[in-house]
Amino acid sequence: MNLPRCCSPFQTQWPGHQTPAKTAFVSTLFNAAAFHDDEFDTCNIPRPAMFERAVNKRKAEYVAGRACAREALELETGISSVPEIGEDRAPIWPAEAVGTITHSDGWAAALVASRQHYQGLGIDVETVMSADRAHRLIQEILTPDEQRRHASALEADPGQLLTIIFSLKESLFKALYPIVKRRFYFQHAELVGFDNQGQATLRLLTELSPEWHHGREVDAQFTVFDNRILSLVTIPS
Image (cartoon, rainbow, N blue to C red; front, side, top):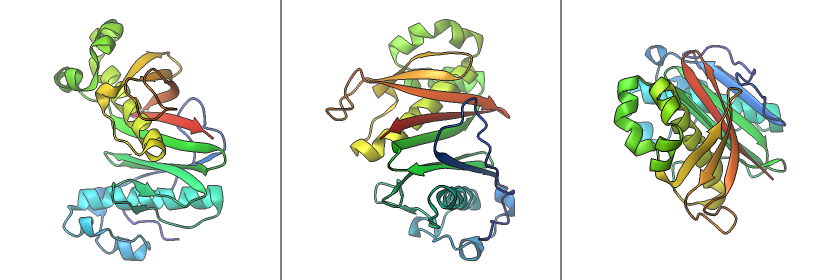
């Protein structure tokens, strides 16, 4: 298959501390300035109607992320398919697969697994935010309990900690939304704790389903690389 010209060769090495079992991971660096509109056709990636008038940055993110998703799908399941966008704007994966896509500031990735091993997967990458931006977003992203629980870490490095929590909550949403089909937001989950190895625990603060109820805790992980945070939530089958 054709690699988009705006993308670097695919990488399959998980950058975190603990490679998720029985998954395929694919990442690439992309240059939005090098994107050409014909890459949808040359790379056989269907162009969603919403991208007809999108700027090149959005198109490059989409093409890079979908190229990673197709490669990961083929590696893990043997299916060569590009996940389309559903009415809820979530990727539509083949029935036998689960997956997740992320991109930020010139880096895109996808993680795919067989549905017999996982109900849901969520990855999210974020560039570490500045301390000033972190202070502006604390009330939006953190619950009052989180602000008290992580006060010393917030004081020491507000940009990194807030980016970690933001990313973990995004990954939690990506992993759970395909299961529960209900949207939830930053105030509906909290970071209970984390360690220096990148292991973390999240707790739901809302009722999503009888199984995914208020108080349910979920294991997660994150890693710091190249001034980015990559987080992961896996929901086993």
